[in-house]
Image (cartoon, rainbow, N blue to C red; front, top):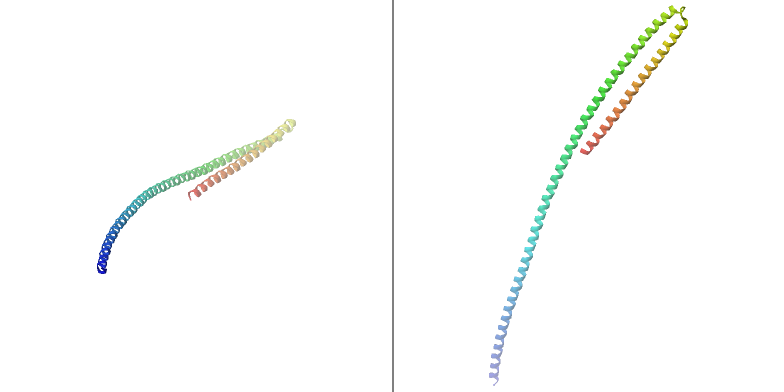
Length: 209
């Protein structure tokens, strides 16, 4: 009775163990399937993320290349603009230098002509004074001979001649002073113009630097 009962228990236990094993195998299979699904889902998620990251990288790379191209274009444009400005400033400096040289030459020529003119006028005035002095001397000589004939007329003529000489001398002195003043004024104006042109050239050279 006890042996039969013990045999029966083994069979039941064996059956129970088989069922348990089968159940565990099925559970393990389900877990494996579930794990595989999770792995596949995770891989798909990672793949999507990788694709998104690659797309982002490509977008950033494209933007970076465009930015570099734009920077290159801006640098080229800035360089071309600076070169054009430098050429323009150099042309301006060359033009101002030529203008300054022409102005200096014009002033030199003007001063030379003015000096020649003043010398001619002075020579003419001195010649006139010499002639008047000679005339005066002749008149004085003649007056000395005619003193007894017409003292009043002679005295009046002498006075007129002296007044003429005084007036001419005053005119000569005023003319000489006027010419000297004009020459000094022209020299001052020329120095001021030259200083202004030199200041402009200096400013343009500083900009070029």
